[in-house]
Length: 210
Image (tube, rainbow, N blue to C red):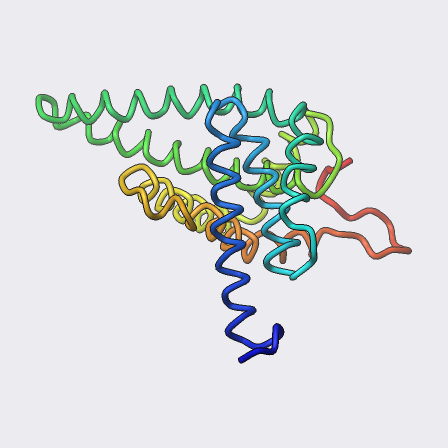
């Protein structure tokens, strides 16, 4: 019971990490245009600090946030605008369905497009947390991962949509769901990263990274 390496204390430590990193993400995302940098930092801190048990996860969050803000900002503005447009179109189709049943096809199309964008952004910010990219190369490489690992992309999109639904309707999930989502995303993303990471003495086999 008094051993700091006992299961109970390790479980409490992980629970605390989930809560603290989730709150870091929430407050860092409040200006909205910082949500990309915050998501990049959360993924990095969750993978290294929680999943791998490395020390300094909290400092790592803010260090990554500051380091990747410049690249994450245009991605946030561009794809945030696209998501907002898709959301507006989805709501419009939902409104028209009451009068025109044919609008159901448009509603489904907007839903699929929104999910594709969400899955794409999961790859994009995870890549930014791990590798150095120029903006154009980042967008291109994220798209390649999105297509090459389409089943993983679908799972990422659905899990992210579920997390967004929970956090926008209830207060309590905000205390742990963001970091849990990052860890769930890591379970799908990290095996793909390992597959495309070249051996130390081998040629670069990545799908377009810099």
